[in-house]
Image (cartoon, rainbow, N blue to C red; front, side, top):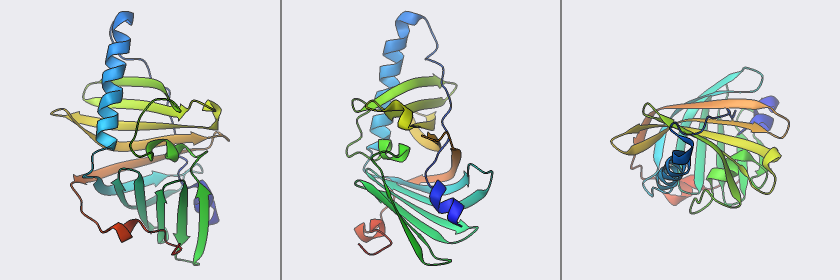
Length: 202
């Protein structure tokens, strides 16, 4: 699964329209949406869910996602077992089919944009576009220092004022695209700190 290890966290972005309404209303609606996303990603309760990831070559993987502010774990179960842990400034993936371990820095990876602690969607993060309508909120993020390095788009559903992450999409500097769809989301998870230990034991 060499292609899958190399493609980890290339999550396809989409270009988003500005908030609906008159031009004079856009700053207010965008600021409100940004604040909602920050609150959701900083929720200390975290969440878990099942995901289906579509890779740049069209291949698909499935597994379980576990998120707490600043930390992310992906347990892949198909097509081969693999564990990925991302936190601090790096991401480590272990493929159990061949016991290989891959280290990836987050400083130039789109995923790193949502793993700051706490999450503040302002410099050095650039919010490139926002769409908020019909119970859906989409927000695209890039690095203000180097926007061409990668773009991350998060898609949330909204119910009773609460956001639930349903999709992560991104593109990397090579324009490779991938999509991670998330379902069966449960909040308020409790996992031991060791659950976010890097799978290489470091």
